[in-house]
Image (cartoon, rainbow, N blue to C red; front, side, top):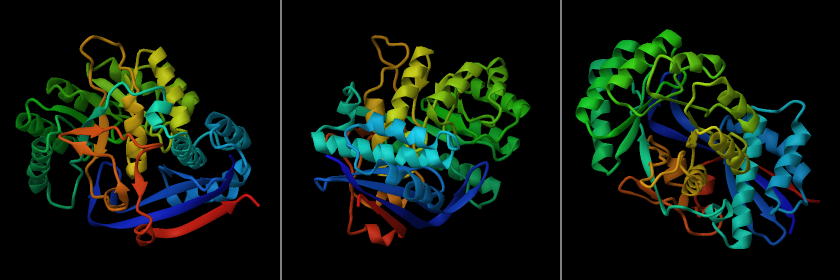
Length: 385
């Protein structure tokens, strides 16, 4: 067995209605999808989180040629070969995102070659279903007096679909955030709620909002502060009872080691399409476990990343273990995304708020190749010889 080709696909779709959060508004989605093909003709697929056109160059111009001819079953050896090749100048950022997508594709390919699911390759599933939380309640262009009831109605809709947990966006402005936090808890008194500011607050603002989240029994406060200032998380935690969650902007076990050592974070959230791929996510989870911290992946993008995260959580032990297990929640983005919902002929099934762990070989999801050209912006191909 050997890697004989690596193809990349920059995919794009335009959205019917732009949506926003504390930092930006989006009117389109872009993702880089990677296909790794071995000498038997079997292929594995992965995706990358980040600027697709930039990451595409990282794969084509740097990594692809360096792993041609290698045994695709040797995922960890290939990861460390890529890591050493770019260590001097790419210990994080878009090149690590490129490594993540390649690594995910290799895990998918390895599962297909061995006729095993990724969760089996990760050590064996502990559960066949993973409880989800609905991520939504993004901002639209409507006035705030209309936006607030619209977001509450959206949340009620997720509850009616069977979601027992959901995550809202905060960071618009303090006055609106406070009204929204209270209104949603009053509307859904028994729902598990979380809040995500996408690093929209300074420390005094995060303390003010965090205390309100405490009062209204939200489960965690996600990305309350900039990832550039890890020392502030300890200061924030000292003022609050709510769990602090972060890590979607972090990469590698080394980055997460620094984050955990700084203190104040109770939940780490690596993205398997960005942190270094499934190979590195398993090491990050072991590191978190050694520090008594739970690891719940950030999920964005398409079915590939969703499937990888589902397998990851199907194999996860909660910290600490107990007879009545605490739920390890899978992020299930509910914003408009044709690249996730229209491109795949085999998807992760989500029923009544729970994801069914795919049982097929590899990641267990499949792109509809007939629909792929509808979304392709550019493609590349690197071959062995």
